[in-house]
Image 1: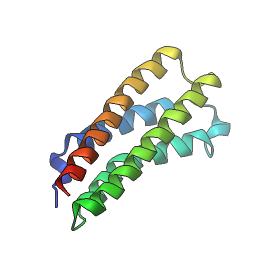
Image 2 (image 1 turned 120 degrees about the vertical axis):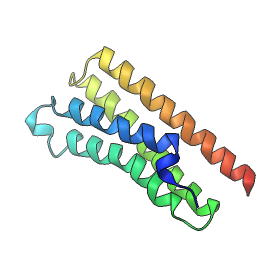
Image 3 (image 1 turned 90 degrees about the vertical axis):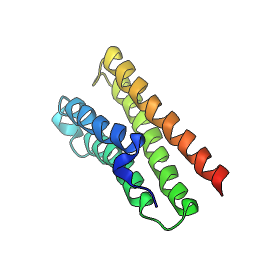
Image 4 (image 1 turned 90 degrees about the horizontal axis):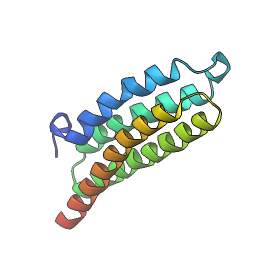
Length: 119
């Protein structure tokens, strides 16, 4: 088992959450149950899946949760692109958020590969 609080990917995921919440706070009210809800749930899902997976008895099971976290990252990426297309976020904000998200994605993929090599 792994201590999720010591994992850099978990720390980055937690720090990324407020950035998405602050971003979605500026969206139109009619998006409350649409993009706002989806983005907020997806961003919380990233560190949550990492934490939950760390409690599993094997790395094989942990990888499944890391893959779920990765899927949430791609969901966030897609929703940010849609938000940009709708004019809800600026190009500059999209770039900044995407760069940080890309860093998280790369770290998750690297950690998955590391765990797979241990199997």
